[in-house]
Image 1 (cartoon, rainbow, N blue to C red):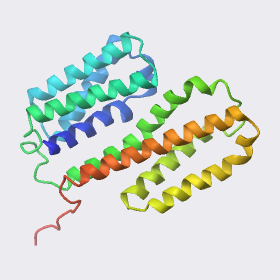
Image 2 (cartoon, helix red, strand yellow; image 1 turned 90 degrees about the vertical axis):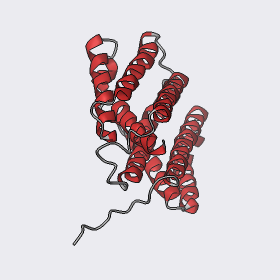
Image 3 (cartoon, rainbow, N blue to C red; image 1 turned 180 degrees about the vertical axis):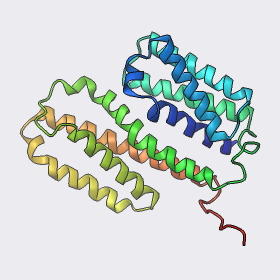
Length: 239
């Protein structure tokens, strides 16, 4: 089950956070865009599992469509709605993996077991960086209009990507000390600006803790998944 779940989770994050463009998100209420996204969900699931005609993947795509329709047409756009939406998708994937645990073992890539930990790592990076950026932006959106932003254009976006990426790597390498140093360094660098404006200080603290917390959870989840998967070793070619 864990192998199928790993492959399907990668398919999900690819479909939702890599292959779904800003234009698709903006116009997702349109039936054509919704149908395109659903087709991408199906294609990524087929690609990661190595299955083409598995009916379970059609069921997964249909469930994804239903969940997205509830979110989009219900007008749910908050951070909590995003979390509920993603939890529903993950629960659906877990149900499919439980119902059809052999999707991976009977797929085209089963002869390459090293792909599973590689998929888990890739999923972790996407969740940490891209999904994390979207989630933190939703969380901070109610506060963003209340502060003055005189920094570089997209500077906060780049800082968030870098800090979450570094934390993800540090945790996977079992290096908690650099993680603490990173938190301290950012606090020191932001102290001058934040100390002159209470709103900015609170905004920075909330955003930083949320970003760091997201990265920590993603890294720990990836670490736990890797513990249940084959080692990331590519066998040398036979002589």
